[in-house]
Length: 370
Ligand SMILES: Nc1ncnc2c1ncn2[C@@H]1O[C@H](COP(=O)(O)OP(=O)(O)OP(=O)(O)O)[C@@H](O)[C@H]1O
Image (cartoon, rainbow, N blue to C red; front, top):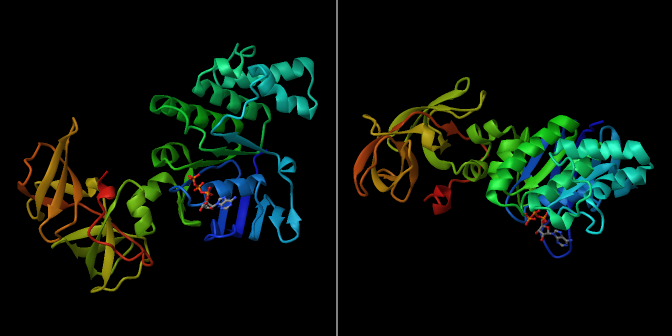
């Protein structure tokens, strides 16, 4: 049975350093597929290890459903938490066959003979490895080994599955096909899954919701489309999908999900959070993506082409608005442009970041253009 996970004010400190987790509160629904995403050192693995029971919180509480598993005066040992873990390194026993590896947790549970063999065969069939029972892990490819680890997890019928960068050791091509395997695994088990990754494409492709972390804190937890279209802070806007953030003057106080503003010398209608309070005349910050911009649009702002790259269906331009020297924006155009050429760029939209976003930093970092 899938279980929900609840963290309240969880802090984890190690000696000699800032808190690895800093006052984290998070509710993961039963049966949800949640990805923890963030740069190296942001605390993803510590959070996962805490749920598994390999770490204890310095402060705060952790509960599965209604049951407290870690907190003041309480610590449930990892083996009593009934949580399955899939590691980057597969963690298969090299001396056991595939069938023995998958059947191991069932043996520990006391399952014998034909019933165990049936469950092993079912789990291997679910990951497309029927007939591999007799092989050794050493005779398998990386992707096959990871599927054996998944089958072992499947055989345990766990309520919670924790995955620590399980695709990190696989090549690009295999990763894409394994994403589908993980989604199918999730549909099949209905388990609550917490998936650690620093690869945003992976997180966005698989998870129901993504928690973006930075320096031990959760910046935003949202469905992938919401993270992309409606980032809560400038840091999330820049991190997810390489959004560009520019300053704007609010012309009409935001209404129900819309605002009128002047940015880069032209007026535009922007999307915003319903109920957002920013008076006319205030300064706001806007997340712009390539799809918010239109090349060669009369009435748009003037910009200079810095580079033009042929991408098949379109050319990807990097332009510098004349009104904001140093700012670089990505724009899609139907035709290629020459370097140094001028054009007008139309503003079709943009997302007005909610108040409380971090201070704008211009010029935009080159990294945002990658
Ligand atoms: N056992 C430990 N002792 C001391 N510091 C630790 C320990 N474990 C983690 N840390 C520190 O806590 C911070 C968060 O580490 P964590 O491994 O959770 O990050 P991460 O986001 O998973 O990074 P990566 O993607 O590189 O694995 C880091 O600064 C790390 O150095």
